[in-house]
Length: 338
Image (cartoon, rainbow, N blue to C red; front, side):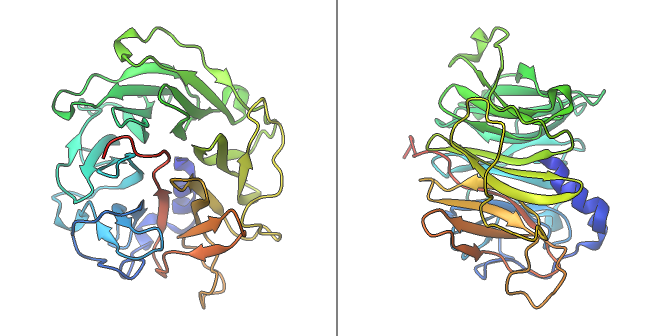
């Protein structure tokens, strides 16, 4: 998901000032417990961003990574569930630079799978539908970014990440099928959605050509989150002068316009960004600065919300004043491993 959304917030109110006061969803928050959660998300309720799990109704929160028991400060973001819910991939500064890690849903087996040299920043992981590959964005020493992919079917002997395509300013990755990856890139200075097809055996990867799927023309707009299910994208779209809003694209044949946003904020007062589809595509999970029923009139913190497609209803899932809960992730495909 788009990294600049949360760092934009950091610039606005300061990450160091965002010390939370408890967990979200009213479950086993604060405990490091086994959980078969439906949503993974990042939260700074402990003072720094860590990865949590919760049920899709906002209950049963469990911590997967625990900065309070670590030896060094760190930031963990961009969690994504594997399709069988057994693993969560995320990016973290545990080793210094951002690297991709995986951890089981019971908080065991944490493994660093990329950037072992500690030179680049590896961010925004996305599991393939069969759980054997992870695609991600790598930002090199010069600031250039590209889409990479690696085989993680055997974590003990994970393959070296393979370069797939340039992804200028890219910060969103999702899979559209077993071999097709969607990502964002700001070629020509404008954010658009692209796709690329990778072989089942990444050793056969040979300079695949990326295909542009949208033709947006708004120079200052940013795609803040991207998810694919049931032949539709959901994305967040924002600019420095306009709060983020959520849109669905059904026709990816060079779409140029976005229609009425989901969770329609007519006054455009709140950021609605970082969306992901539910497992069957009937809901969209996202994070928002909307205070909803909160007594705070000007809430600068983010909470997790759900939007139901059938009746357009919106539900707040986390309610932690003074805390940011961001980057929700649900299963994007039907499970293929049981």
